[in-house]
Picture 1 (tube, helix red, strand yellow):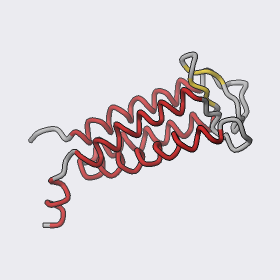
Picture 2 (cartoon, helix red, strand yellow; picture 1 turned 45 degrees about the horizontal axis):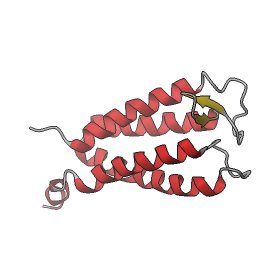
Picture 3 (cartoon, rainbow, N blue to C red; picture 1 turned 135 degrees about the vertical axis):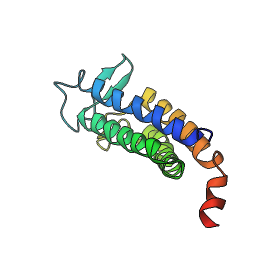
Picture 4 (cartoon, helix red, strand yellow; picture 1 turned 60 degrees about the horizontal axis):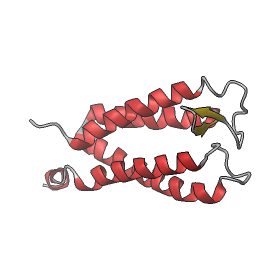
Length: 136
């Protein structure tokens, strides 16, 4: 049986997002939980503790879906990809406002859009036979 692209992407992205969430706490020790400005992760991505928690939850959801089955991974990739697409677009408009409770900056917006492209791309195009098998 071949490996599902959705399971692979969900597992890899999940592991990366969990790692990023954990690393984020190293740079947000003196930052308020929902501060509009945060610490810099890897020198360019702004994060606050809420942003770190979001990364941990998203990473966990992707990891769980990735190790479950291809249908769960496909659903998680598509859903999280859609949320990241929305966040990537909306982020440009809220970054300098009090609505920026995740301490987003321009680098975050582009990374969220890139994540959206990969997650949505795989979620919507790979493992197409899953739907026909599930309805048969």
